Length: 242
Image (cartoon, rainbow, N blue to C red):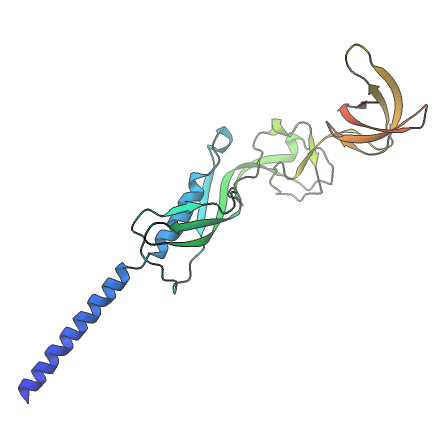
């Protein structure tokens, strides 16, 4: 009886060891989800913008957590990463991660991107189309979503711009919230210039819509009452091909 108990105990130990060994073997044959997430983050990191404007920026890149139930065969070579259908990283990016060769699989990982950088923010609320002076802003370091927004850190770069829409105090300033100053306003008397080179014809007219530099506006000729379209060239001046 004692011999049978010892034999049973011995077999149970062997069964436990075999189960453990099998688990280790299975685990070693499964690709780490962390390695997939890290590969996706590294791909975004490799495509961050460069240049003087970004040297003081700090980026936070975070891959979405993959389903822990996911089981992909371990890749025997370095993982390949890519932007599906081309593309560039933004506040959120989809990154393809794949294993090529004898073992083949592809998975898509969502990656969130934030940037911490110095940026001018409004000291007070301003209405739509308001010009912005250096007294209206202060420099702060902000953490914001995305990497491709053109943040403004130098007050000198505000010259020639106005707000596209009303903005609250604390709004960070970027080219997304600014528009070029209006050089022609609806109802304004403007000078129409036709032709180029030494021969030009000038006439007076009335602007029928607002326009910033290089924007197209419609103008009614004061003499003929004909409506023509031209390009805003400077304050109160519109050049037309007619």
